[in-house]
Length: 40
Image 1 (cartoon, rainbow, N blue to C red):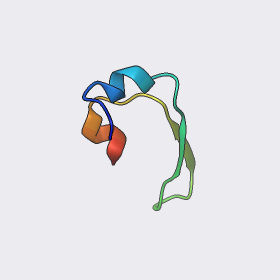
Image 2: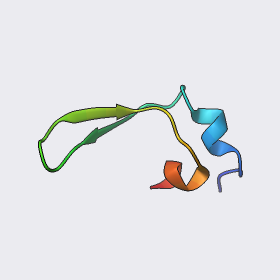
Image 3: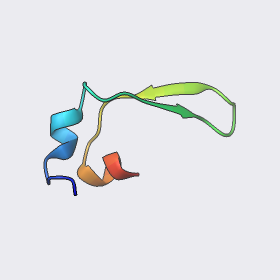
């Protein structure tokens, strides 16, 4: 369970490392616009 404001609580605190498929570049994400954005 995540609270409705989870994206607000973790923005700037939680950092997720992603690798883009098309160019293989590593991207760090730490800002989330919505709870759904955080879950994806």
